Image (cartoon, rainbow, N blue to C red; front, side, top):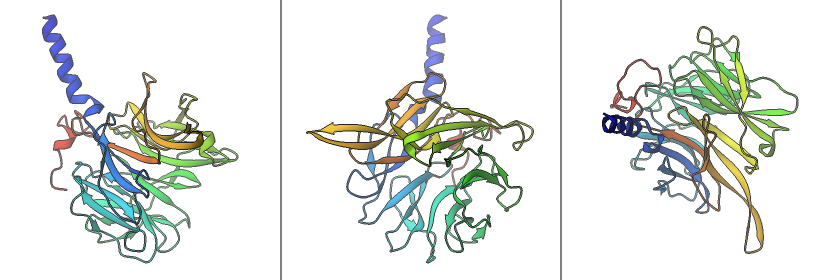
Length: 318
């Protein structure tokens, strides 16, 4: 009986362990910003883009088969998409304004992005680049993040806000503080929490992740905000996101180094457990490894918790 219990525990771990996932990020380790992926434990780091221009801010499609990203490879910042193995790279937007920071709708049918085609605002388009619609009208709104249930889009506009995809019901998520800048992270996989970075004097050198728990009945009322304490050996952090299982946060953190008598700073990617408080360094680059986004095909349920089927098997056509 004891042996059977051990086997059951091991099998459950194999299905749910975050180490089965993949993390997309971009890095300057090879001289300019390029898209990479790696295993969730930091192994198998692989470069997917090769341009003299910059490729940045990668995000997985819901089924993990594609990656959307921003690039100025054609002389202007536009939104691109590629297969998860780096093949079939193609441009989705075509506008003289600056288009960037893409994010997929949970059903994989649309992509939100920000653009300066009017002022800096949030837009939504189909995955083929068609049917572009403006969502915000604030004069400065950026970095959209779609909720797992598809009902809300988070964005930055001095503070962190949420809005319906049709542009209605806007409300503020972050807590205003004097001399503090707010930098959006994103949603937990179950849609019950939001993470962002609160930076004093808008400096990542004095930054703290904040997790917001949403009340089940009304996401706009009674928000609970809790600061996450990261070990002090990390001098600064940025680009926070939830891990694919929601049990940790991923971020790029800065550490000072001295190599051959030369002092400098390096940005690398870390995982910090929200329960066990373990801090794990995933990359060891001399450049800047930033904006980690994790996808895990072996999670037992979808982010919306609508079905017990594995999330990676639900949508296979997008």
